[in-house]
Image (cartoon, one colour):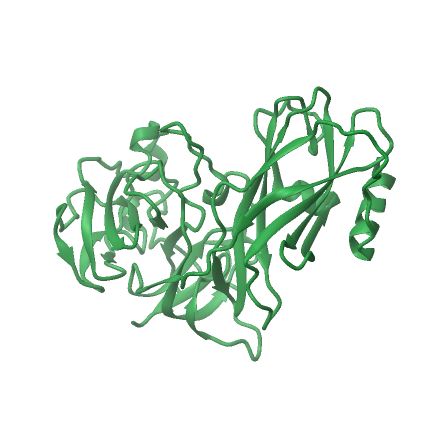
Length: 380
């Protein structure tokens, strides 16, 4: 099967057609893109962040061998995934432990998490589709199916002010983390959604990369604890919760019920069907009420340690409904920030200084989203 996967990769590279037009019709995958991808700029490149859902509607196991994401109108490949690159992006729902990471049983669904970085200067595709290569159980031949057609949002990306001020702040997020916000699906109201598709956890650091002054188990010692949380735009407050208590120590904080995962939070209506969410706020710190208008840069609350959190930080994301879990995360960018460095290995956070920017790297970023685990400061 390894040789078959390699052959599929060669077919992708050469653009050779793999479909046997004389082969009989067969049942295979239902391919769906639930949330329309929208471009977001990261380190100068336009990136399309979205998911392809594959459901096995056949009566036999199907092994995924390769996926090609394409510009549907031009038929031009934008990205190819096979082997380990495919496995890293693929998550099988209700998978049996120890089973093949690329095989879907009859009736099983898998989700492929995609981040397509478009070449500099390349036009934004208007539609995407996907060419799938797979092998039925017991078969030595690859089979092809094309589907997962989706439009690409052409509207301008939402541009925001900072949710916190000054720095250094680390923007904690990464698309490869199995339980990171990017890959957590909620089905609280009859539909599967990813509210945290573009979520960032903001943690304040010192110059050496430490996150606390003294014992890090004491919540109040965290550098970011109590820091002002700012309105990212002129907006209307639509939801507030400020009744969740905190523990004095991180180690005393247990797992939270799903309905309490946000802790104290507030939501702002940004207009055009988009809502900004601030979560894990300090008890008693929320300064606004539903229906109140706020101005960009206005202090609305303070960073805390409530809800489902592993340490004091601000969780921030934007979604398409005024529901913390029952909404799809939507793209946004920040007006301006300055890059101080990054943590290529997040396990070094708090143990070693961050990696400084490379020589010649552009430090002041405008109209962008911070790359994973970037250290930034806001002076806006």
